[in-house]
Length: 55
Image 1 (cartoon, one colour):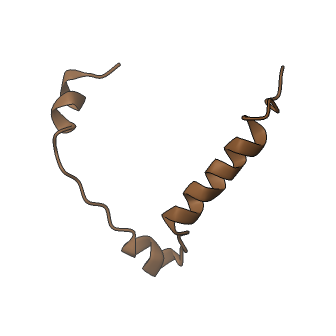
Image 2: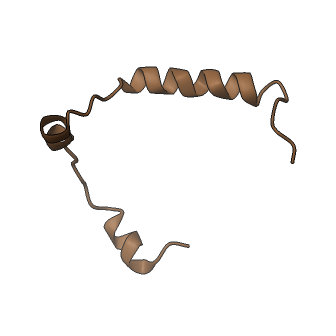
């Protein structure tokens, strides 16, 4: 459910910078293209061929 306050905030523009996590914690981020490609490969391998776990 979306609240009125959340609806108002959805029009705001936001900017996030990962520079602090890189500087202070040494985080290394994967390129978004690689992440999307890996996610698509996983989806094709596990879901498109009917390999979904049935509980």
